[in-house]
Image (cartoon, rainbow, N blue to C red; front, side, top):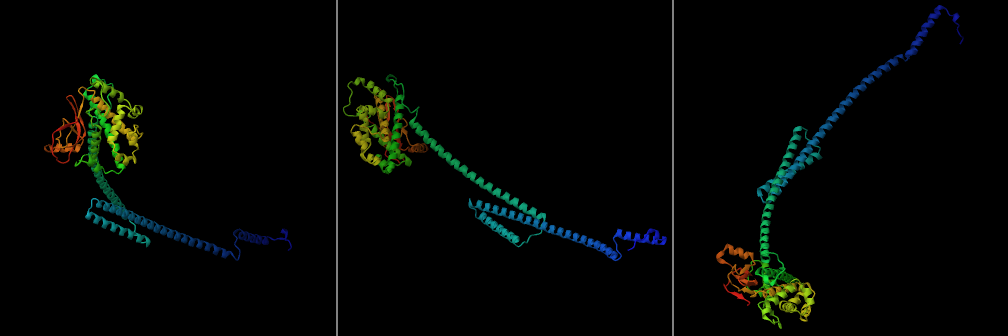
Length: 470
């Protein structure tokens, strides 16, 4: 294309050129072509229309989401209401079951039936709530429903606490009754203990008197040694009864062979029969200066009190086992052998130990090293000391016991059975008579140390005599 020179353009041509240039410049600036100008305008309108449609869709989605949230909220509230009803129903079942338990003790027929019906009713209600949950059949929610369910739950909880409180009150009353019963048993045990203490320690400690001098002897010293001796006798009797039980002895038959036809106040009182047997054997010939030991006599009668008091002080602080080992041929050793062979029967020893080895040792002049013989030797030592002290007095102390059937006398006798004393207090005109003497009594001048007796449970022939060993 040939170039056009500016100098060759006319003014008319110049104006036309400027007009065309403006049109081209406008099209370039607006982007509207001769053909697609209309289309572009139409496209802009379409965009506006599409924008309006989009806005409508957004509004519609928002409305749908709002509706969906409301439904979920209603469903959640309905579920909360269902749970509230469930908890209320469970609390009702608990209250009904507590009521059922309470009605069983003490037994209440009407209360049991009412509680049973309530339990069945609440279980049916729970079953209905379960079906509602499975089938998604929820009631329309209301705050009243929630509040009513909560109120019902709190009422049932309160009812359960009330029933539990009544049950605890009943248990408290039962415990109070048990406490009263145990207090009575404790008082009874305390009475028994006081009686034993009275028997064992009526005026002081259970020990051998110290720093004794023959010139200062008085009945209180002798009384202390009597109690010291009785304590040792009872200890040995307990050991002997334990051996009898271990050997399957018939204690009833054994007690009846010692003191026949005695009706005891308590089954445990049979121990007094065995104590009677031991005392009877141990105090046999107590009134003789050397019991019944052969080849024993005093060279000078006038020194009798000094002689026995010296023996008393010599053995008082020594241990029986050590003294026997050191002086196996002493008078006390002879006395120990004699009393063992007299008290422990061969059949008894065989049943206790399966042989006669202890008896064989004692007969040969030796002494067995067993706990049974050690307990026996300690008892024998105390009886020997009591005998020595009795003959240290001038005149010497005498021994006595009461016959079967004697009337009870507080001057000469002490009862070992508290039940018999209580019976005599309740019925003074029917005092139970003496069944047997358990521990003998003693006289020292005008002083009387009571003998211990067991009173009969039944009336027997009365005899008022006292029997002396002298």
